[in-house]
Length: 279
Ligand SMILES: [Fe+2]
Image (cartoon, rainbow, N blue to C red; front, top):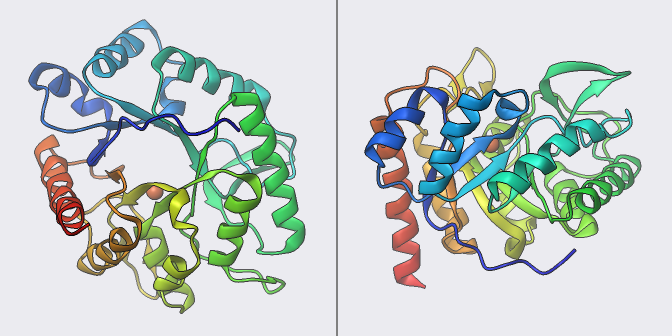
């Protein structure tokens, strides 16, 4: 992979959602960048792409997806990757990201990001596929740690170690979802800071923050609420170690007014500023 280009994205951004797009174009809120869900634009018509172009002319963007199915044993979907590449060529995102997960088997797709067994065999498999994707796209990608609700009895290493090995061996960068780490720690009974101790911090290029829901016996990563206090605390611990890494407010269900998202981003920005000042 080529060396990282100068990063233009700084500060706390927001996920671009269709219901906010016109307001963003009209009002141009003081948000440093937006994360765009790549699959939303694969079959998009001219109007949607024209709107995205307007946003892109005003702000830096990143492309984030759920469809690479990097952990699957299905062949890589090069039609999907070609669409992603063409979107990236047109809109020049700062980077492209997806998840350390699988979403298909036997050509059948599910709507959940399913975790990999943390085994050497799975590690070799997913590293080889990330290599192929990075070669095809001609860029280093960011891989995100997913939220999980199951684990495998034949796991050979903890999830944070597996995640670290994936990043190191495939020479990809990391999108560290602090909320996902907190949710998993709570659901599976480990210290969320295990991730911080394991991560190759220089590879952490982006952080996600989101809200979860407390269900009967577990936490569910809904992306549908304000960020919870313990996730803010874990975020603070994270950026104390990584420095002021670009951070995204993810909100995908029960999407509120744009002002609510901007306010959450401002809270994250205040924490980033505090870290910058103390550096
Ligand atoms: Fe995320």
